[in-house]
Image (cartoon, rainbow over all chains, first blue to last red; front, side, top):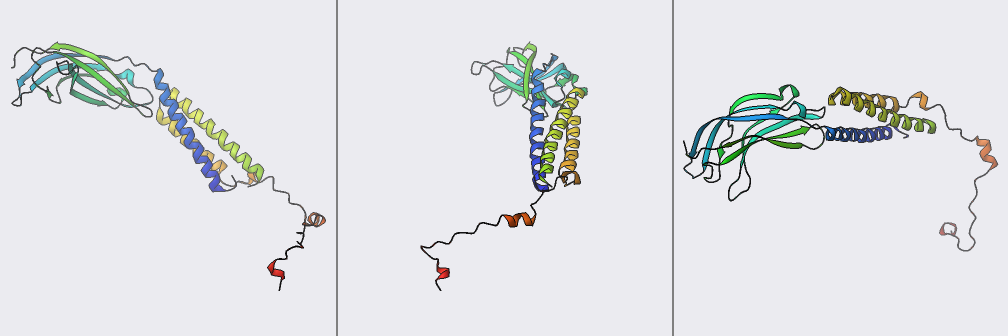
Length: 167
Length: 93
């Protein structure tokens, strides 16, 4: 501690260590936070349901989605990434997930959504198993904190069955 | 900076930094703002740097008391005892 550089070195080291401690504690406070998300979706219309030339089923949907993710925001939340996935079971795979729509919520003020959407990404099966298939629409959300690890969770927001015939 | 000053500076640095970190964290948490926490802490670190890093006069209030030269003459430096067995080459001229 006899020279300016020694003191500066000690100070920066301790300050950096304390900053790391503060960030860890901030992340730790998130473990006590239990968000209560409400969300609902409704399939308004199957716009298109066909078999592609490659043999894969393709679906286009119009959905009504409403969600309230305000409770996911804490003081340590940077943003929340949400996506709606269609999930279904086939003989080969017990879980098929196709992302239909996603959104990045940057702040709490924009965390309550109500929208009519068509699928942003194509809903294409690997093969042709979709006729009459029971589909679950699942809302996944990833809470990205300012410090700490991403918290992910999901909920089923709709159940529906695709028609037996192509349109 | 003298010995007492160095001790004071180190203790001040540790106490101030921990204090600012605690205040920043509690304030940030209560106000629900990560940014406020960082601003308070940054201000605290800068203030602590200004207080403890430069060699301020109040770190030099206890200068080292060296012995007087007379005192040293009373206790002369011990002389090395010359070895009789093997005189070194320097003396064999």
